[in-house]
Image (cartoon, rainbow, N blue to C red; front, side, top):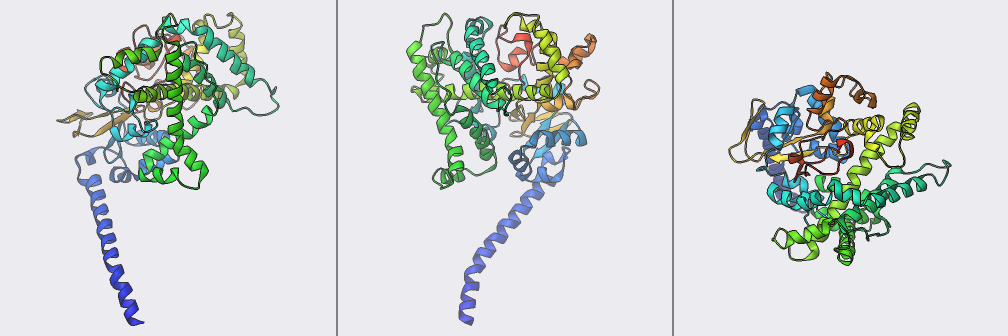
Length: 462
């Protein structure tokens, strides 16, 4: 008996010793990050500075945006939210940083957005690469091009409204489901041409699962996903495979584009991407093109459906506002002159301010030599991020009731207040862009009814 106990003890001792060494190493590493590293001078709570567990936990529970905003309220316009990540909320600093075209984005964060194991525009950390890849999309979404396809857009939107009203209010409807279908039908035309009419199938479900997969990728080690693909847990396996299903959609879009290439009076994204391939900006096979097509479809559907679903939700809570908008819509015929409707524009603008469709809007990596921002030195490799949500919530002087959905704030006659609000990088006002076009990489004549865009990641941003 004694020999057995001694044998077990002798076998356990090395394992316990290794565990103790690992724990000690982690403790010293956390102490270094929180108290000794050069970033320790930046304001913020100790735990996020010491470990990435805090930001992973908030992402996992979908609370990162508002938790980060709370830290800005407590600590000021610059706060450390992870050992190597700094959140910035100073307008001038954000503008000067994100207008630079020589800074890369955070590779670890954007890796989570890969599709079918392949890269596309936003997963390239190198800003010049991402910028050149986005140009075909910019060229295909000019006012002229989208006006050309507008009849198809109108047909798809009308069908969405019909589908929403089929049950006559007898049961709830998932507005996000319908929006995903409508935006898929519209965006596939821009990507591949007017002849493209792929059935949505399970697309809304796949996109929903992919969104959760991105969160998993940001929080869990890579080996977990290889195991989940083969696991008996069907839901988890489907979620992991959603990336592959999206890639398959990209391949179908490419096939449709090849059938109708050159049949429209304007160029679709696919044609412009193929033109770029000739200059060596893409791979020589259809693999990267398929991933690119799927990625752009994903980006188009999710930002749009997310932004609109929030707007519809808050409109539904205010019947008098809905009534006023309905009355305003009677002043135009069909889809004509919608950009001139002040209340409609105000509701869209306020929706994008109140609930932006992207959490941490974009990131940049500090280059060699470091940067001085707001009196703090940031060494090379530090990730600097910002979020449009906080750019209005942290300005009670411009948005006194910032935590309310209030479209009327955009209808007042104070032009100086409008100008100040619009000076925020992701603030909006009717008839003006949310960011200077060069920062987003958009052409000056890019289609932008009313001048509003969701505050999307700048070129190359996640």
